[in-house]
Length: 278
Image (cartoon, rainbow, N blue to C red; front, side):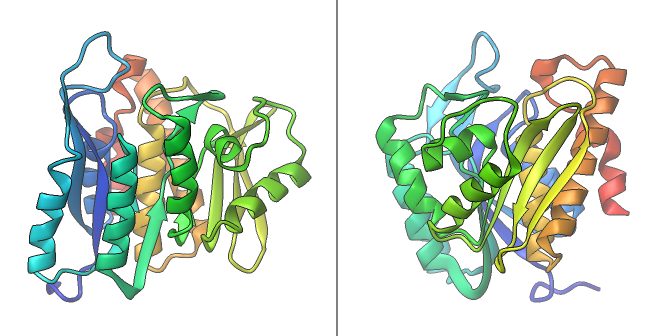
């Protein structure tokens, strides 16, 4: 039987959206299915994600230090710390402080620098927040920006298609020079393929691609990064973790289209969780 000391645990810093399959409502079941204890730190509470025409929003910036302070009193450490959507510049500093406080030498820190998509910065992100995100990225062991976020971090001009692989390698290297050991640039379009660029700590680069399938949906980045984070904490090599994550996301998109799930409702990963458990 698994004991408390043997089971791995990840502190996950992200928002909680009650409806729409994104952020913690995606991360918690996926990390759990991979047999890792998921310990959430909510950055905000939403009735549903902001892709819907109306939503309730409660910012947790002022509550987060009080929440985290109780964990300090319990003298907790974690095998992984995984940071997702952050709603303010102050939250970026809170996450940096948390990494310093709760990391042990073997702790894996995974940063998903959620700042934008399709070449545009999210409205909630100010230029200062984007700049501070570079600082947070420096504390990561693995960072998983999408192509838009990689451009924001490095200052490269965004374009959806037509990337030279040499330029993608240079962009990943520039992010690696900010401090993280390993970098995954996700969602690069190469014709009929979607490619993930994986830069390992020894400088090895992999271009992992698969045929584009189905429609673009909310929450797929959360599914992807959750699997990468859990696999990293389990000691799985990054390339294998990325392959597993990309394959699962693709299967979820196809299944969601088959079931006619509305795009704003994300992917019906629940239908396929057994694949992760096996």
